Image 1 (cartoon, rainbow, N blue to C red):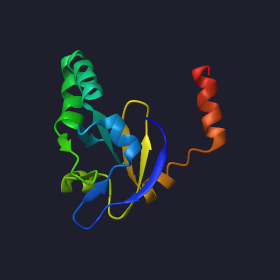
Image 2 (cartoon, rainbow, N blue to C red):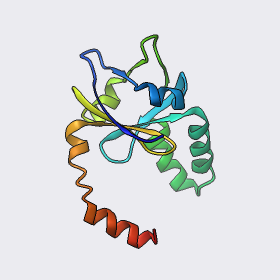
Image 3 (cartoon, helix red, strand yellow):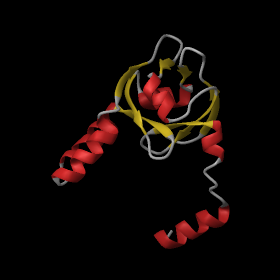
Image 4 (cartoon, one colour):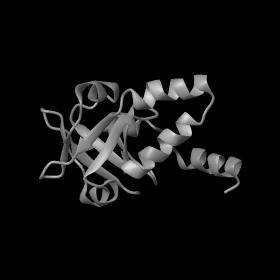
Length: 136
């Protein structure tokens, strides 16, 4: 998944998933807390892979990741208009109120409030430093 799209979440908490992402997520997927003040949506196969990696960790680390990702996860189904109803707890976690940005992150989708997305401050110089450190 890749790309960035601006959207809104309506007063009932419904979010339209862009058609490009719908085809990659599928009709059913998992929505959970993301790293940073965002939500992450995983296709079922990517979610199953993440769960297996979490289960394979030492007990304490596995439990901590389960508490963060698995406990807050919800099985989602797209409605006929390509929308999901984002649970209130997840909306609060990510500060989702109106203007949102959906971002493809290779194997999952992230959903950010516009304010949180803009606050990421990923400048070209910072990215160049990260690439150097990673040997890219």
